[in-house]
Length: 259
Image 1 (cartoon, helix red, strand yellow):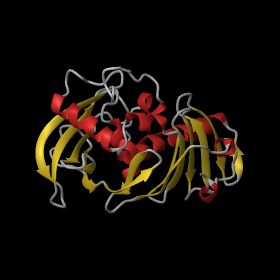
Image 2 (cartoon, one colour; image 1 turned 30 degrees about the vertical axis):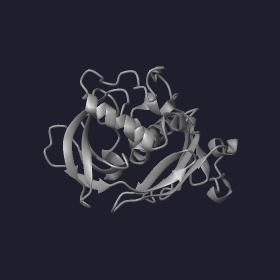
Image 3 (cartoon, helix red, strand yellow; image 1 turned 180 degrees about the vertical axis):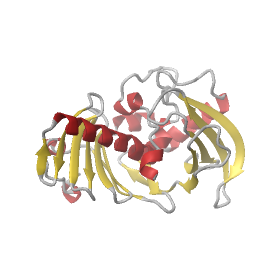
């Protein structure tokens, strides 16, 4: 299942905590990024990707993002505070949590769940869903995350036949599945990620899947893509302001009224 195999997001960078700032770099690496073990060329390409996506400043200034993950879940994420809303469409369940404190509220079939063990279980599951689902959406912004090692693999063509530089991402003791490995195709002209491959273990020679990253759209100050071939992310939006009720009330937000 896609929802279980891609939980490799690094939480400190998502929440904006622990990010190393440097006046010398327009895209400073997060604390814990494996600078020594990463290739200079791979780092250079990662910086080009960030710039092509809108730039580090625009990414840092992006406040709220919402999206629909394969029709399973609707998520709203406050990048600055770490508040997240996860609406599980099929289970009639809504979880409101903070990814920094792991505290939250759970609503099931119109009623709030109050049993502490149940709340803890559902909050943990919702956080795992957010880790996975957000990585599918914003991975290109996270190439220099804590725990990441980047290697330059070489030149290759995507499944659509376009020339690209290929990066390999591996992880050190971070995320829910640190044994994962990714290969990422970066278009030579646009410097945008155009394809990725997922390997459950870094020793695997064959990927579990290879999918495109396509149909980029300007969202606020950044570019985001939802086209993943057989599986798409939909209803992607970026907001400057949202009502506080999004992260406090059971009633699911009406995206048509969110700006």
